[in-house]
Image 1 (cartoon, rainbow, N blue to C red):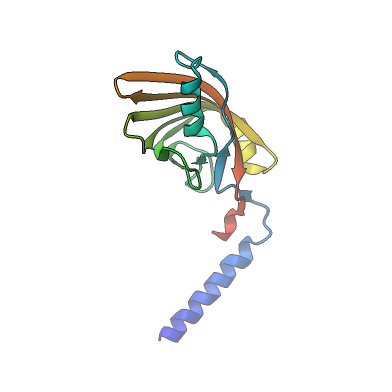
Image 2 (cartoon, one colour):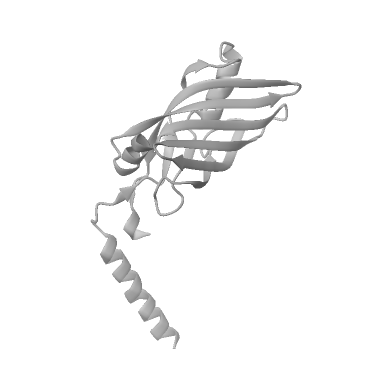
Length: 173
């Protein structure tokens, strides 16, 4: 009986792989954040604050399409895999309304003095969809980065380019 079950499983797996190969529906596994630019906001003029915001955002992976590879309203995650800094995983909500997308995410701070790390970003959903469909495209997101450092609260605004990474054929999964 186990041999028949394994044989059927192999046939199903082969059929699934055959259906998806070469379909041209490649989507990124995640979006990779470039170094942020255009700093502003209440605390953006201070170099130390810009460095902290850069550490939080630069090189971060954002999974903005966890369900069916489509950028849509729902839970989104972020990771700092391979990044040697004080800010780890993040999770939050993404809202897609008309032509605008927003992300409201909290990050884990490994730095004892820094807490309440929040990323709030706005982006054009059309540009994000193009970047989701074509590895040659990227899109810009405007962030407000805020955190608590001991007794003071900080807020920095900046822009960041997100590019799709690790593109895969969605029909294979």
